[in-house]
Image (cartoon, rainbow, N blue to C red; front, top):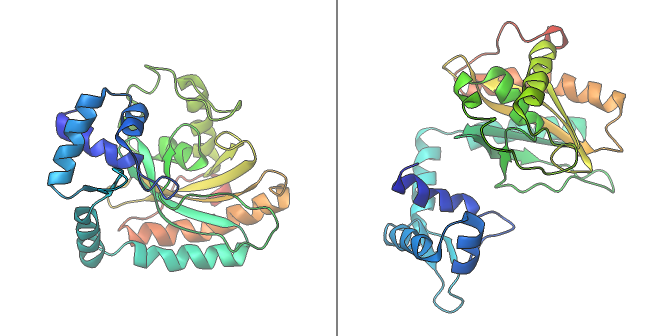
Length: 258
C-alpha cells in the first residue's frame, strides 16, 4: 500500500458513531506512530479531505468529500436509484435491508432501511464498512466476486467479532461453496452475537459480483419462516439492483434462486 493509499485509509476510520477523531485515537486506531499519522492528516487537511476543529482539535471529514460525493451522485446516480428499492423491500418484509458495494477488501454500505416494527432491532451504522469474512454480504462476494478477493486471505489471522466468526481460509471456502450452491449466504451470529443475516450477490457490468444485498434480524426472530421470506425478498431485489449497476444475475445461482 502506497503513501497516498495509507493516508486515504484514515478516512475509513470515520463513521456515524465516530464522526470526529483526535490525533491520539487516530494513531491508536490506525496502528501507526503519531508522527506518521500527523503527516498524513496534514496532507488530508491541505487537500480538504479532513478539517480540524480549532477548539476541540478533533478531525472530521472535510468539504472535498462532500464535493466528490455530489459529483459522483450527480453524474452516476446510485444511492438515489437504489435507496427507494431497499426501502420498499424493508417495508414489505418488516426487517432491516441493506445494500453494500465492494470497496477494496471490504464492503461499503450504500443504502439501508429498517422499518422498526419490533421491540428489538439490529443496530446498523449507515456508514458501516463490512468485512468479507464475518458477514453474509461478504461471503456472497467471496462466492461470486472477483477471484482476487481470495489472494492472501489466509496469510494472517482474521479478526474475530464473535465466537462464531470464521477465521481461516478453509472455513471461508466451505461457506462460499455453500453460498454458490444455494445462491445466498447466511451469517449466523458471526459478526454480531445477536444477529443473523441472509445475503445475495449483486452483479456489476463486469459479470462478477460487485456488491450484496442483505436482510438482518435479531437471532431470536430469524426462524425458518422469516428466513424463507427474506430469501424470497432478496431473490426479487438482487436482480433489480444488478440492473442498476449495469449487470445481471448469474445463471448458475443455485436451486434456491432458480
